[in-house]
Length: 358
Ligand SMILES: *Cc1c(COP(=O)(O)O)cnc(C)c1O
Image (tube, rainbow, N blue to C red; front, side, top):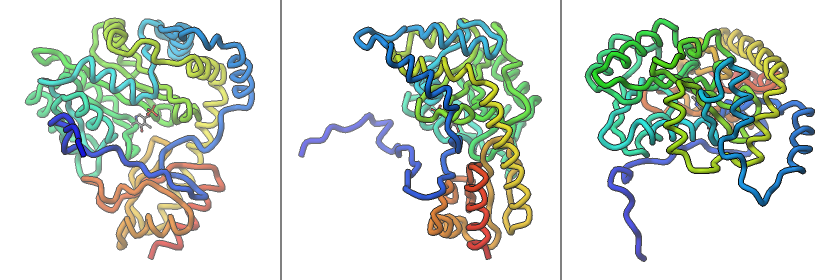
């Protein structure tokens, strides 16, 4: 058998693991537990029947960008959209990272920041957070000064911990990357921003190297669509436009995203329902033998006391409740992450957890 060796720098790399198991209660990937509004589905179907399928889609996704820009009160030239915010992050890294450069992350955080970075051939410098998972600001600033990163990632609320990054920390990190001899880019991943109190969008301007990424996968109930975007200075967006493959956003996706923006009110109602359910889960966990991390997202990270996390995960799975098993991830010994579901799903999770815990 003839095999072709992969790139030397990819040989040791493992793929991204997130098992898709068939269970009754699926609370492992931070999706929305409810579908988008029926009126969105109808409007989407109507527009889909009018697509000119023999033509390439609008390469610049003009209407979608304009719609996103309007929601955020920025110019369309400040918006770049792609196939999920993962493709947004990949495009940022292909444009501003790559061989010979360095990316800084503060761990634990979203695994794909470091993973996608490595795929682009950049060196990744990981700095530990404090034991309570908050940013160790002195260590972060020292790492930036030492590593001179081209791209630095923050994630707020952070996945998988749920912690919201205080504005003062984001400002301090931004100040540090801005004052490097060669300024670096700060990417604030806000996949869960609507569940939290504040957004780094308020820090954006043409002269500041900070950008904010968002996704339709979580708050918009549209993980099936694969659509995400980033907002930043015009110079930043025009560089990404050179790197992305032509016509990367298909016609269906552009329609789906543009129409979703008509339902901002419904999205916000879903977010409120999920935040209320999150608070209910947090109160229930308070009464159980677990330690939990304060969450500003649609999930809660917790660590069972006196029993291995993996055993609790298996016990939940035996009761057809799937949560994310982070127990073997670096720095997350014994931790599990539960996504907030519908009230019924959350009841099922809490009942199963009570049975499984000692
Ligand atoms: C879920 C998630 C994303 C979303 O990625 P998509 O590709 O848009 O589905 C991005 N960042 C973080 C931190 C996430 O948890």
